[in-house]
Image 1: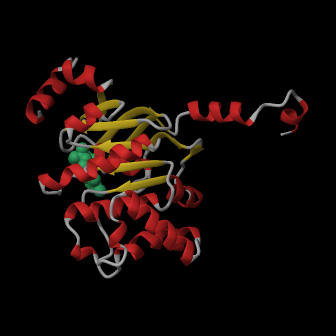
Image 2: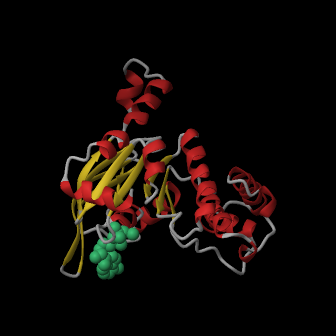
Image 3: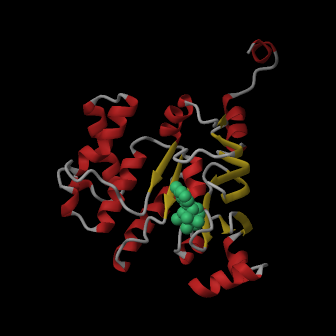
Length: 263
Ligand code: ADP
Ligand code: MG
């Protein structure tokens, strides 16, 4: 804008610092119903770049619906969602922009069984972003190496363990270079001995500065790696805070009971 060029120059780094402080994901008074069942009853949440936020709560409390609203798999009814400064209002422009800004990994890995691992990772960048095949392949190899599966480019999904398939699903999401990664109980379907490898990948992503919003039952992970815990109860953020404090001193009876059941 003219006003900026005419006034004292603002250095790029000052602008970077400003944008780094702005929330990457911002929800205000978010509501969502299915029929006459109110599932989200006014959620306020701000997630900053590089933050790892764990969402916990009983089955049915609205955790998945919350994530699905953030990446617009569900259209919210009321309130506002901003991702990377953009207001999501359900338009097609949103869908295209979101495919780039928000990655999501699910409990069921949903790999394409008839495509090799590498092709699974290359597909979205090529189809959604128009990335050339050779570049998509190079990036896919890079992302697979990042999740510890550099040698599995030519394997079929069915040849991999559940934990490996889930790491491919993470690589596939990362190949789109999302600004935030949403994970919905991504270790819940895994045999216990395979959970650690997937959590290690998340830990590494945090170290690299990735913003993560995870619905998880892994309380140790939430405590040791997460920056903040959100406890959802009946469609509301019932309690939230620093993991160590929240787990040691739950303020509400509902969180106390939940932790008693899962810890
Ligand atoms: P959580 O992930 O915490 O277990 P969900 O967000 O999946 O909770 O579900 C919250 C509530 O919304 C549940 O009562 C569930 O039955 C209901 N629900 C979720 N998705 C749908 C849908 N597509 N249609 C109708 N009801 C739904
Ligand atoms: Mg769920």
